[in-house]
Structures are given as structure tokens and as C-alpha cells.
Image (cartoon, rainbow over all chains, first blue to last red; front, side, top):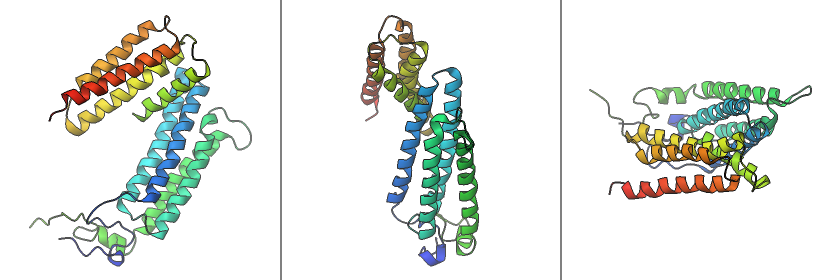
Length: 160
Length: 100
């Protein structure tokens, strides 16, 4: 039997009882990645060789990992809460910068080249989001994630 | 699947800039390889989720590979039209063979 899943008891975790609906901010976040995919096409167009294809594949893997891990976080934590919304907006802004730099990621020149922007943006997002989750799950959230706590799915049954 | 879409989009852009040009190796890879990648990805998805082997998709990939033989003879836009036809046939066959 799951514990009462009201905001106080579950910290920043999503309410996993009842209907699960995707929130508008999650959709908005995905929109940034539509732009990223377009930029990846442009990168492939810029260098339509086998090497260019491998470079595009690497960049796709980076973009994909940031998107997938962030989506995973919003599966577990409630994007309607303010700290999560701030996190998502921050990630969106950094993703936009990363996407803008994608077409010239391997050929950019200058003091702050496009490659550096892509690499730093990736690192900042992965590390920053992970740090946020570690910090955010202290307190009631951590309690809720224990077996039988509010973080469990509604249909969890205790095995006696 | 996403990689397939990226490649196909790049192919579309190539065609838009010069519609009646004959395909180069690179653009043929994008125009035929993009849809092939997508179909392969979707087939893998169906297998992982439903343990269902999609022969339609395997046939589609073979058809796209065979189209590669026609590359020197056809303009890019015709190649893209054929690729689109193959994908459409795969989709139509899907609808026909789906269990009730």
C-alpha cells in the first residue's frame, strides 16, 4: 500500500498515483531537441563523408544522452514544482547554446570554438543536473524513495 | 530511428538545392540510407518491445539496398521518390498484416 502521496510527504518526487500526464514544460523541453536534431542534419550536410557521418553520430549520442537522462529525471521528479522548472529552463538554455554550436562542432575556430561550447555545454548539463538530483533528494524525497514510501508506484504490493 | 531521420533530412536538403542532379555516393547514402536506418530502427524497436520480427521491414531494407544499384541512372529526386514508395509499401503491409 503506498503512502499518502501529497507534496509534503514526497518532497520533489512526482505523484505516481493516478493518471500520468505529460506536462507542458516537458513538451517545451522536447522542442529544444527538435532544434538540436535539425542542427545535426546541418552538420551532416556540412561534411557528407564517412567521417562526417561518424562525427554526426557522436554528436547525436551526446544530444541523446542529455535528453534521455533529463527525461528520466522528470519521470521521477515533479516538473510542476518550482525547483524542477528552474532546472528545466536552465537545461533548455544550455541545450540551445549547444545546439547552435553543433554544425561547426568539429571545424570551429577562435578562442571559444564551437567544439568547446558543445563539450562544455554537455558537461555542465550532465554534471549540473546530477548534482541537482542528489541535492534535491535529501530529506522527504529520500524518505519517499525507500520501499513502501510515497515514491513507490500505486500498484506496488508488499511481499510478506 | 532518429539517426535515420537526420540522414533523410540531410538527403532532402541536398535534393532541394539541386533537384535534377544525379546522385553522388554521399547523397545516395543519405537518400536511401536514411529511410533504411529508420526502418531498421523501427524494426529493432518492434522486436525489443513485442518480440515480433518484422519481415516487412527487412524486405524494405533489402529493397532500399537494391535501389542503390540504380544510383548512376536516376536523378536524385527520382531516387527519393522510390525510397518514399518503399517506406509507404512497408507501412501499408503493416496495416494489412496487423493481428485483429
